[in-house]
Image (cartoon, rainbow, N blue to C red; front, side, top):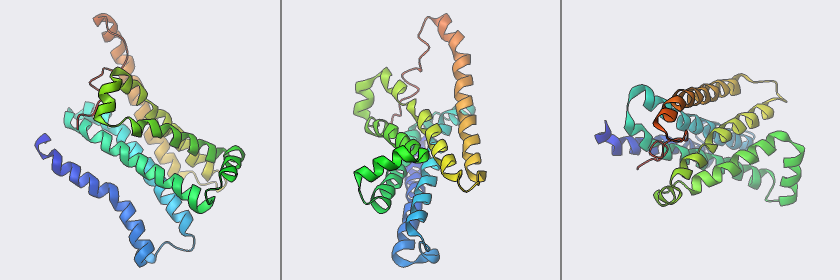
Length: 220
């Protein structure tokens, strides 16, 4: 399967950019009914949803690799994570530009006033160092610290779920966010179980219980 990795990556690029292409075509050419009566809300909701989807896919790659033994999956994780950051950046930009018109004071007041905005801002800020350190050069420079830093993705996922849940609290509609919450909880649980199982083995081997340097580093 690894021999087909370039084709798989090309397909991943197509799938990753498809949501954005759909929004552009709906906005420019009015396809699929256009962007509706409230374009800003639709774009905000769509980019936020795809951020969560990409985050869940990124988190699922390591457990899936362990279950299947397909080591080549790890080489797709960085691209999935960057797509999560890409849609998260579009989500944040839509809010800053079309909702707040780059009014810094209004944004700060909104962050303090509304917890779901605060949680969304926190998730995006935490995604920044992950995106910045995603290059091979930064991976080599940080060494073992790279794996520790990128565990922040779990914090990002929890913050994103809270952001979504608190946003939905005014509408009393938790059906969709509950699906993502269950997925993230299952993936976090899988990571915790694996760490607990590995700890006695690492103690016997006389190595630290931190994530091995080779596991967290995509080699693409």
